Image (cartoon, rainbow, N blue to C red; front, side):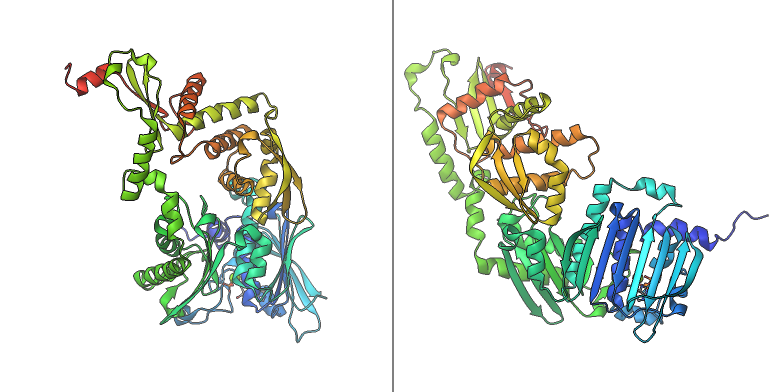
Length: 568
Ligand code: ADP
Ligand code: MG
């Protein structure tokens, strides 16, 4: 007898659930999409316990009648697609008819809905795919869907979830994308009983951005608008100054659909070229509109990605649009200056600096000093404002000034942290610095408050998304504190998945060391060069920086002799 059987619908639903509903944020996404598809002008999202206990989305959209409510939770049921040919002109978020069926099979789902023309609404409960309580119910016009105990019957998926904080951040990111893609729709978002934000319909994108990301970010946005043939691009691109190490501040909407699109991100990145550091990512909020038949939205079960009919044309258009904007703003000059140190030796302008540095730092060779033992020669050469070159016994030692300083600071921070005490060198600021943060940054700050305080930061809450910095560790006093803090938060945001506190602390320490150390391109005077080298000698490990790059390279006298063919 054959061994092949056809899977039951129950097994199919549960096994394929993960493709559509991967985590609580995916439920939030599907429910908001349904509300917008139902022409809602107001959407309220309530989550409890990072969405695991409950996710509730209430809208004032078209609503459903009894028959549709009973159908919508079945597998593959939709009102949005009737013919396969419709798929090329799809204007709604949904069309696959999968989401509610899948969600209903892996949670306890309660749906209440009323159409404008009906006096009473209808309620239906589905528990793990099995129909439960149902009947007429009084409710406002529109639909509310509540999803409780998500994945209670799929332990494997539940085990796969990250910490509550991470899951909550994913939900927040998801809601923010819709807040920005649909400024005409009102959005209220509540977490564990507290209101995170409440935007009435028609609050412009600029107001929403300001509230979510703070003044420091929005004041650096350049607005963009470009139309060419079938393509239309609008939105904001942030000045190079607010580029970041992650892509968290990149928002792409294609025909109002929030998507992850590598092609558009790369096109914008290439327009920035050398304006930002090689590893940095520009920040932007871009709305790209094109005819429906030039984009395929059905390439991903969660519809998070899209494919373009003509990739090259899209890349070209996006790149040109951003390019023109950046050129018009004339930012090129700043970057040239900024990169001088790194580019030293590579172009004419940089050579000029190198020349000056060498001129200042090298004592003119005097033939009479030949024969003096090398130990007496303590002058340190700074090459390309990056390398320190000194003698060490009979050997030649070359240091990377940034890496060396980083290593010294790393050990100091580590030491202070291990003693579990504040650095005694923290300083009270004359004037408290006010930090305006985005909602995501607030999450990260709260998450890491403990380690920051133990490093010497004194931080107080100061109204909506604002914090007061009262003290900072000594090493930070010359920094632009606002920028410094944001960079720290940025880096910490990459720690999302780090489990143990100590691992997190180590990363923070490495990061602080890196941010506070002298950079490539910084001029050091003779005293500073020597101090750096002798201080490095005191560290426990002076061979690599916290990122594993070498701090010091030694060329021995016999290596030198070989180079000059004195010996073989
Ligand atoms: P899809 O959105 O792909 O059609 P779903 O499973 O998400 O599939 O939803 C199934 C159907 O249920 C939708 O096509 C729509 O007719 C109906 N529906 C779902 N949510 C709502 C809502 N909030 N308001 C009105 N109708 C809804
Ligand atoms: Mg849907």
